[in-house]
Length: 371
Image (tube, rainbow, N blue to C red; front, side, top):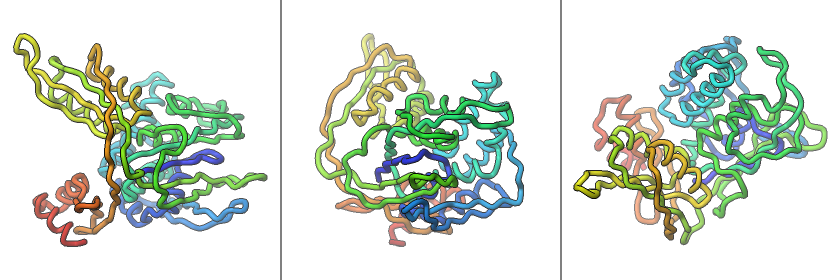
């Protein structure tokens, strides 16, 4: 599923979560994911509100613990308990940016305004909603930067806040908004999800959602719009990147594949090869949407140290597919259905196997039987 975001008046973590819920994400699935963090003393709900002339969804987080400061390492550990890579990556990005701004290692960062329940719930909630909706690609229109000042633990800072600007490096931005239009939480989520900035991609529109912010604006509704669609059937031009590597370990190659997929690669794989003088080697291949090819090329160079690569154009035929969800032992398992069959998502089965101790192949059969 493709997600395209229109940050009409800006974007915050709670606005994104509300828009995804309004587009069809299951609130109970989001609550279960947050519960896996071990966080206590919270309640997450959603209500329909009117903002300007529009009806939209707004999330509400009620907490018994009003502490807003926590070590970043604690929040990162809690996020990774959920098995949601986007959540862990978003909080890691926040810690790295804050550490760079204040001159301390990321592992020693202590979050102030971003250390409360809201940050963790928004980030884990959005990651869970993306998984529930089966989102594999995130696109976003240019983000309004905002202007003015914001008061923080470190005093009055310019808007956009320094952490937000650092997290938005590489994003497409625009003027035309007042106040804090984009929050660090939203910026971190977009980075972790590998968002591509620009016009909406060609797709078949399936659902829309409107997430309301808390501010009331005098001349317009304060909303972020989520549009969900499936890739248009037919041929799609993509770029193949490839490079020969004879000095990179298998552990590093595994890490590189994960980085490439998280950064928006359509696929990434490694094949064995024999180079000159009989040297054993590997060939790293990356299938890249045209708009992500340059960014993915930089990931290859940075992670492998390669001095060059090959680029070629291919025609990819993408058949329509959609996700259904079944429940196994209290856990959601996504089922990818195409024209010629259905298959459970491997990562979801692994999560159920870790909880239950059951063999993976038995769970795959049970998931198919549950349809």
